[in-house]
Length: 385
Image (cartoon, rainbow, N blue to C red):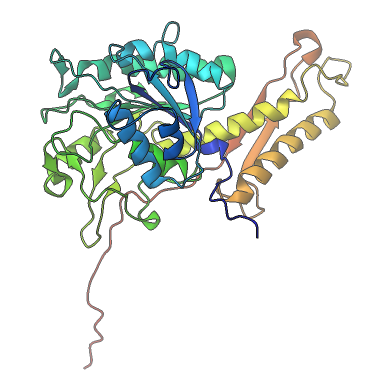
């Protein structure tokens, strides 16, 4: 018999890294070194235990409570003194080294800390390090996109939640960064990034992490600060409106769900949510890989230096075919009646001979999401005279 080993085919779309404060373990687990694991036993083999690295251990355990064994995740331990702001710095932060070490394969990075220091500065209801890390994380993700052609998103742990008024992220412009608030332990200063990463790792790129059809999250208890999610309706509503990612309950359903997949930006931004961000990033990667085969190829041009029609149509069709094959056919894009989920256009008036540059415009069709459903309910009564 085949298929009995309990392994899962690696999905590049769900390849994430969990960055967390840790302590080194002899020669088996070194800080600021990436380790790819596929199950909890792999973490134990590195010498990481609940006793020597309790927070990192919990995040990975939470990850595999959501994701199947065989799902690959990158574990990256950092010094406990390293703050998220420094870690996310695009020029000097160690997460930059993590990204390059994986040759651009990472689709998302989840950043957490395990700091026992009592000198935490709180600003607007969270550790001030969270808010100062926001622009750094955005710049780092944009660097990976523009310089490495390896787009990704970053989720920051919403540490030291105090219950006071949080910064309104809907007024920010960080459409590659999210802040997660809420944990599986009462009064925790941390957030359940392992749970979020594990759930997201098993979802296709177009899927909202809060989709109820996918079932409840694994944890049987979840908290916002010291209060159970069940008792925090007004807090959850406020944090949701401010574009944080938080857990929630639904009346009539058991278990917990993520409320939505907000990113730290204006809700009207095209990429205000993780699902469209992951969709466009996958299309970006496919388009890059497709066009890379055309680099420095001989191109037939007209007398005015523009590309001949046959070349333009060939390039457009090649890109569209691959996007439709790898995304539309898999239900990751909303297909038109003809079955197409994207349009590729190359302006025929470009003088490629003189500029050596071809500008390609690619547009993909995302799905809509019913965030609010209003039901007009009434009696159906037939009157008789």
